[in-house]
Image 1: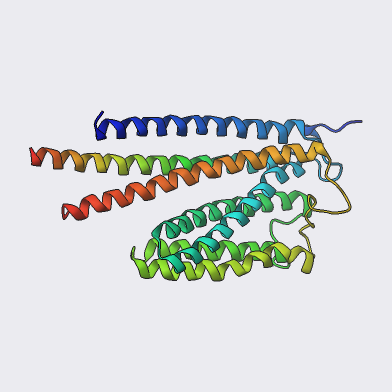
Image 2: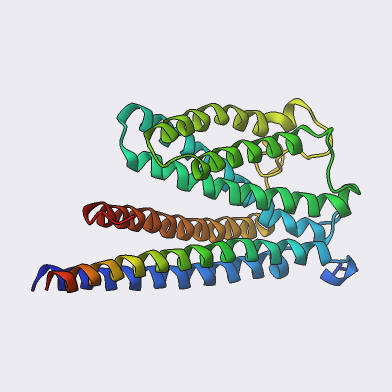
Length: 54
Length: 239
């Protein structure tokens, strides 16, 4: 008889996949937020410089 | 067309390309997950637990590759003094740490149902992988705690070069001191892997490599933006 995915307790497999996705996409999200913050700071500084020049 | 509108246009193209690559990567991860969890056959002895292989092994390859890049970029920085090599080494070390972290916890969660143990201090592959993780954690801690200057970059490069010694030891440890960790199945010269196992593996390798490239692109953007911010602050004497 052919085995199916439910023949063994797959909890370890699901935990590995979920944690991997969480680590990779969580880190990507953290980096994207950080990049956005730095870009906003640069834009704010540029705006201040422009307003003081004019 | 003036310089600023040209800059805005190229930035918009950049964002569009990045979004497209992000979407393609996400689809690749979905396909790889389907191939690994549904399409790949159940292994006779380990059953469903063998499916951890499709995360564990591609990420291990990526970890080795990242740490090799740290090694090469560190040598290039010490010989050329060009900061772009130092930035590449730091980005690769971060990627190496993320990949090795996933390799360690996926290995532990694979070992529990198959070997009956989360961890074994007697297994050379497990211990040398942990040592690799600790070396590059030390590398990143030095980078974040040390001052952002040439001296820190030089010391980090030396750690990046010396730390690489552990990579071949980790890789060949399964041949030298066999205990719990099995020999690599994909490189065996006597048994060719079946395509039903090889294809999901290749999809997973492609998908997780794409995620890592995506992380590398964003990390590189942060480095560039941070440099720009520092330059603006210096020019205007802002702390």
